[in-house]
Amino acid sequence: MKKSAKPKQNRIALLTLLFTLMVFMIFASTMLIMGLAGYILIRSGIWTIEENAKSDLLFILLIFALASIGVGTFLALTLGRLPFRPVNRLIRGLRRLAEGDYEARLPEGKHYLGKELSGSFNRLAEELQNTEILRSDFVNSFSHEFKTPIVSIRGFAQLLNRGGLSEEQTREYLGIIQEESGRLAEMATGVLNYTRIENQKILTGTAPFNLSEQIRTCILLLEKKWSRKHLRLSLEFQEHTVTANEEMLKQVWINLLDNAVKFTPEGGAVEVSIQETPEQIRVRIKNSGSEIPPRDQNRVFQKFYQGDRSHAREGTGLGLTIARRIAELHGGSISLESHDLHTAFTVTLPLRNP
Image (cartoon, rainbow, N blue to C red; front, side, top):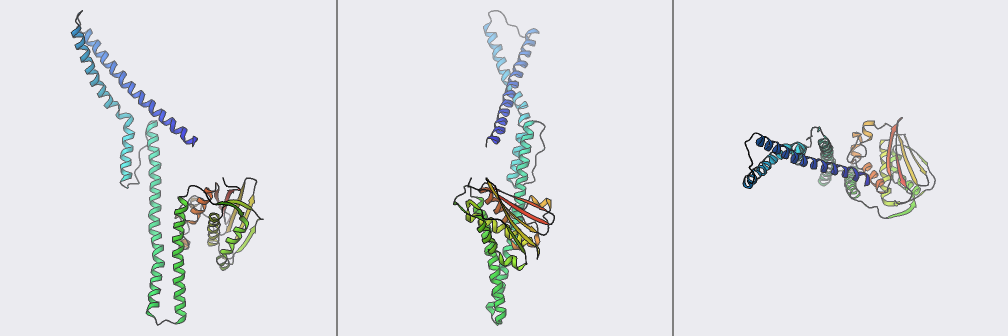
């Protein structure tokens, strides 16, 4: 907080200084112009002040004051447009954003204030545009993902309702309905979990537990998936204990292991290793197969993002986002490396609750 507060205080101080200088320039310019005008009038003999003519002196001073007000107002209106021109541009840009035009951008200012305002606004507009693109993609793809199993369930339910099917066909159609309804439930659960975890600010329910045993349990829960693809599993770790929220960390291992199994080709390998230091613990889940392109490596943790569209129907694009958020709540992080026909996610966690 201190690092971010200091630049903000510097900006406020600079803006205050600029405003003070502008007021001083207007005041000084007004006095200079009126003083010069009075000097010229007196030197040219247009205005003469006789001795003991107090009324003439008061009249001249009154005219001088009124003229100063007029000149000062004119200078304020003229010079005041210069520093506030970037502010006017910012207001117009904000109006465009409020109307839904997320492509609005401000030209780079020539001075410090203009550069600061235009740079901050353009970053804001870019983030809003990216969020809108993700939201639009999610609505399109996720509504399609929801519609597909619903249409499938409805169609096979209608066939069952008509009757006249063999026992084998009935079992087949019931199996499809069961599978599609399970996929619907999984998608809905994923969205609900993400919403809950995204809004959580404080980590609660932490306790010490056997991390190694938890990972072995998660691997067993996915046995049907990795055995179907004949994958080779390698577990390289001893017994390790960590203080954390056990239920939340279970989601991390399920998501990462399921992701590894999903993208590992048949007959490939999945490796899980754990390294512990006095301060933290690292869990590395590595799988063989195709690499993640460098352009996609920074986007895999974005919500609803799915790089390989061939596996899109197998998930919601929220697994890695949820895993990273849970790691951050624990004071840890998740890193990715993908090269030499393998991909590895490394989860770093503190040994004790931060």
